[in-house]
Length: 422
Ligand code: ADP
Image 1 (cartoon, rainbow, N blue to C red):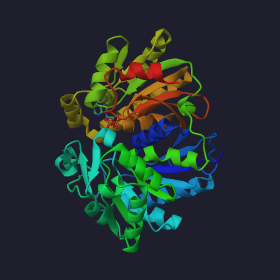
Image 2 (image 1 turned 60 degrees about the vertical axis):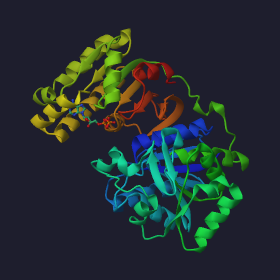
Image 3 (image 1 turned 90 degrees about the horizontal axis):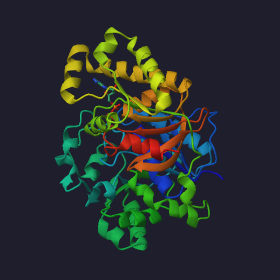
Image 4 (image 1 turned 135 degrees about the vertical axis):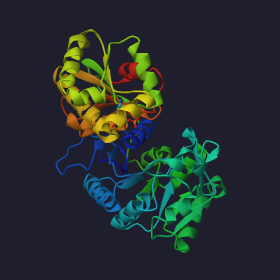
């Protein structure tokens, strides 16, 4: 069957989050890492999610990568396209949500689309065009001081208008609440006034389901992963796919187990402490690694001696005061790249020695390890914890992977991932 939905996500873990949502909706889904090569082959799936790292790069580069991805998706036969960004609308006045949306609309010859980052399940709602995180306006949360994309304005019509030459309008919740016909009429009314992108209110999942129905004929949809919950039904109603609870069922992978943690977020620190209680663990320190690169070989040997008896953990995670002191000594960039390179080399050597079940904590860390292992596509399986599914590599050797951004997952995530992954 030809895939029905082609998605372009502006970051790695956001792409996984969307893929997880589509699989839960019954679509067999694959995630590709980076702009796919022309000769990239994919298995029989219903949806494709391309994970870019385009959230904070220069708009021209983000546009170029997004258009190349779109072209590849069009060649693969997908009919509907989805530009996925963060549910907190992470962007600056320069972009990249506006410029990429505009470029995709032009390439697809589309004169109207929506922008809906709402994800009520995670507390992201939109009311009268204003984005809330829990009970607070977006601009009153920690997002107002984000180092790369500070969000100091909560009115999304205002935010998006600064990023695009197109007219941005608003569909309020009462129009969605009133049902499909009223919603469609609201879209038409906005179009007539020259609006090209509509921010859509959404306070509950019911709103997202109604919106999903109204989007059945849209060529391009933009939003967070929340808006994807209403889409799978459309494809079934149009006889394009058969939704299946089995979409998340993947063939089991057997082999040695390894956990790599390069995130220093609170959730990961707790997960490292918990997992270390019952499993051997090895700590990497960037300052020592800088002085003595042979620690990488020592870590590989340490793990090789123990992996036969059960899973092992190699981690660089450290509390914030420790990270601060390390960064003062060797600089944050150097510390980060030393750990990322070390994690990549360790993963490569241990996969060569038989590791087939791999859990990785940290968005950048996961990207670095996937790169070192030459992984370019993942089939998405069952959810482990919200936003994090188990996956397996499409190419050989088959490796079961759980890739989680630092702050995701319960305290027992590592063990749960090893138990839940295919
Ligand atoms: P998260 O998803 O929590 O942001 P990432 O893997 O994306 O995790 O980012 C964590 C960054 O911190 C990586 O670049 C990693 O190499 C770096 N890092 C890991 N451990 C340390 C440490 N002990 N000191 C300094 N930097 C570290």
